[in-house]
Image (cartoon, rainbow, N blue to C red):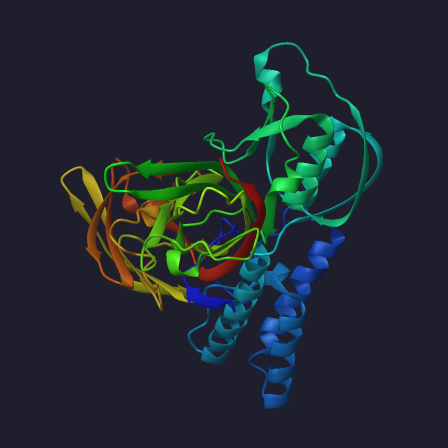
Length: 434
């Protein structure tokens, strides 16, 4: 069962303007996009209609348009019309949840025909939003581009990619720093990727190594099973956790293979630009006659950010305790002051429910973008100092060096607005023992 925790994640508009969804129309917008924006503006105005029935109808219509309108909803409001602000906040939170929940589903691929590998990979990337890099091109001449028979119908991303790589006899290096799937040549033949893995949502689980060890003096032993956990590059988990009491392993006769320390919880830290991590599971060493782990079942717990929200603060010369809220997060600009040649921007970020995501050893929030922006769109980066950190709040003092008046700038802060604590059950079969 999915449990929602409040935080955020994704991409939103770079400019927040006052008014009921009013914003300039980009020249590149299609007529359909312009019509949608106009419809949203009209419905937002109706949220303040004289009749309750009209207000309820407008709110329902906005919800029916789905998460595509999130960037079209206003973030600043006329203080004389509080009901618009209240209803837009409620709509935004519901649509945030819809948009963020979709991130936790597997990306899917629909493709059929005999196609060159390069076009297959390009189509998979385009349909799923996952970056795929052909690292073979880094090694020298143009690599082969074999034609492959493809038949995918809403096939999960990892299953589709494994099928393609098996046909092309290629592999993946998931530990680069590009937050992408890197395609590499295989140095020697390997078993089918698709046959030795488990897929669950955007995650891929594979047993990569099994080691049996015995202490000859103590007469004890252990079976070490190493798993590679990979996720779609579009996802950016904050941290992963495997509770050992949720591991179940059985040999070919159905007999249980106990874990060594059942009450251990393994937290798996995640580097920002990686798409995979390894974890070792320690089981009791079975009798020599056992040939394989016939089934290994577990549950991976992931803290995953949803859609990113952008908060913009203007009139910095007078700004003091200005609050802005979206979904389940409130960002407060506590004050701006000059200290010699440095401008100090004091902020406080409060999450309705962080559930451990702000623990001091988790540094993901320090990577949230925060900058000054002038009227031309030029961004000024600064340094940050944490001033407060509790279970649900983080205070940060940002330091900027600018010579011209601070009134010439806006302060922009981005943060994930929802974080999901999600369990992903997986099951691996036929793991051969040494």
